[in-house]
Image 1 (cartoon, each protein chain N blue to C red):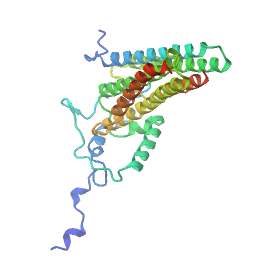
Image 2 (image 1 turned 180 degrees about the vertical axis):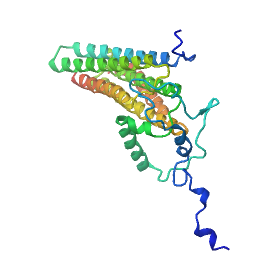
Image 3 (image 1 turned 30 degrees about the vertical axis):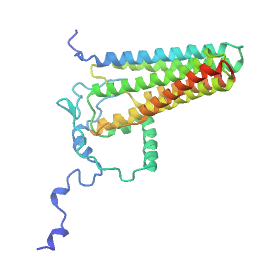
Image 4 (image 1 turned 45 degrees about the vertical axis):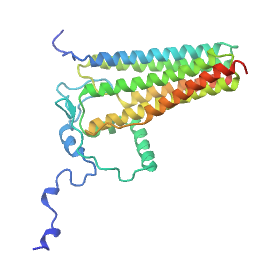
Length: 107
Length: 206
């Protein structure tokens, strides 16, 4: 321990970091399922676009998690999550669902 | 003797709580307003800025919060619109009340992420129904998949809304908001599960 940082005995930042990681993992599962939906039963341009959008949403979630994890690691008493980030994460999730709707209806 | 009393307002009622309709902020707002206390995006904060309304192991809830002036559906809609505005204007959240202990904000964030994972699981379930039950009739398959996808969208939107409400309640020192959404989601998932059982038993024959 360096002395400059006091480690929280409850490991709250670490638990929050792992929660972000689990969330990105769930997003990865959804993106893989979206890819399977898009690529089975014939490849079409619309399906490929929807699949690419799903991948972009997942990358967005990944980027948000990366920035938040870096902020959590930077301070010993990190601040609350900015509402902008929460809204962006929810937007990515909703966009995944919208792309999924397009893929399911198309098939 | 009797005429002098109502003419002059009581001098001890002109404190910070005199005109306030809420019970909490008069107490907590005085404690917390430190300009430039920190940046939630980068997580940087001045050392020693941690403070809040957390005393000896439990939240100091606002004493006897007054009932809502206009209860009902209209007030709910107005509240929802205000919350939606707060999703995108983080400064408004930070202006109210006192900054709570960072551990409570992180716990709130983890709860939000858990609800987001629930939403992602519902969305993934929609994909899975579409992909892995190919023998179902088209209507049942697409209907179930769309129901699960819609449930995922609702769950994600509710997650951020509940997170904002909890964050604001913690800043104000109020009780955390209650919600009947978990019960509703449980019912919906149960109905979908029963529908799946029926569909799997019957649908393969039809």
